[in-house]
Length: 275
Image (tube, rainbow, N blue to C red):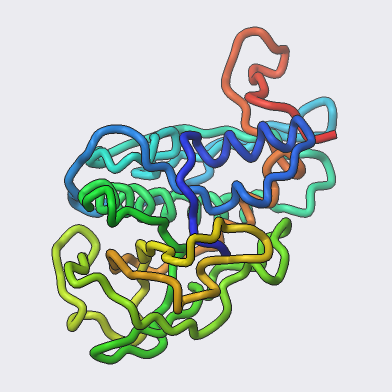
């Protein structure tokens, strides 16, 4: 997994668009949205995903629907204080898909959990002075910690991204020793301190790369902790599902659809399957 770069788009739509136009999208995975106005961190929502619909189609494909509570599925993830949400989402799953409806539901749960933590990270990012703003990481598990260092590995729910090279995947037990003198630490939505963190906690970090090199397949900032200045750490709930499963299936195993009157199936595709 890579440090997440700031992009002014919604991740799931970016991936779908790039697939539909046959463009590579490895660099889009892990995108964090940071646009919009500054906002304070508020209470931490608990997302849930429940299957609500199943409709076979004449093509052999089928429609599956999910009720997402507090997922912020259609939100901008710009740090705006989250509201209680109840969003219905529908997907057309291709015939013979290797992704079951239960796996799709689980991946969507992981996406919802990432949405909540990414939105909180956005709020922290925008609270920092411009010269301290950087890029966020994926969810890390603390494997060791001392007064002057923190050692982390990826949350074990993540799997190797389908379109990532081995060099772009954060190595286990990365040690970070450089911390801003005004390091910001949060326990979910509450201000905390570095001394409150412990082994086993799940965190996301805001890191400022000081190497002067742009992120690329040959230079992954997260794999060069010696160049990273840690600006903020947010303790988050551990993932309960793997969002990678969802991202890998977009436009290959399934496409998002919306209820509509212009189709005999009652649903219109938001984008097409990749060719």
